[in-house]
Amino acid sequence: MLIKSKGNKDKKTWVHPSRKKILDTLYGRDTTKNTFGWTPEGGKTKREVGDRWTDADGKEWEQKEGYIISVSKLDDVREYIDSLSTCKNKKCQTINPKGINLKFIRQTGYCINCMAEKEHNFRVKNLFNEYETWKMNTKLIGELKDNLPKYEQALRDADIIPSFVQEDGTIEKWSFDGDLEKIKNDIKEDIEKTKQLITETQSKIDIGWEKIKEVYNETFEL
Image (cartoon, rainbow, N blue to C red):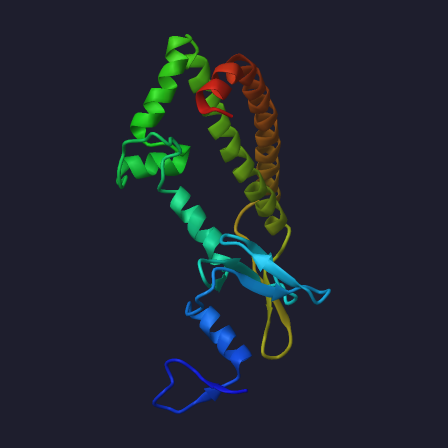
């Protein structure tokens, strides 16, 4: 049996009922509350609003009110981007944060007022200095760990003599103006110092954490 598809009266287009059902569902024209999909066993699966599932092709779907939509991976990206501009404090009064507030949220997860309110708890417990020192060491070790691979890459690059092939097939090596061995030794010293600083800083972080962890967990509700 063929029936006329809604929305195509002028074109006199006829579609099979099953195909019309699919089109109506995809475009939100389905009047039913539930959607049924085929399982590998051949039975029907009842979908409730908000349900998500993955089809045989690995594509993810979500049941909406009267229709289904494809779940894009960009949804996770959008959610992450939104988190960069939203204060973690559910009771935050800062609306549409901009400027320094937005910068604070991206760095700490909280706007200025909410962070000040939380850090006040450390002052009350006479642990603010310990908390500040722990924060500075945590930031420092991040910078040290970022610098270490850069030094190591510089050392590897120093062992490579740039060269290129001439038109006649001969190979020309670039000369280096300076004491290459001294430069390599300086880089090696920087690497060893950075590794030592990472170890020392991590030790300070661990000691500081033991002092503040109880108040920190209480303050930030970990």
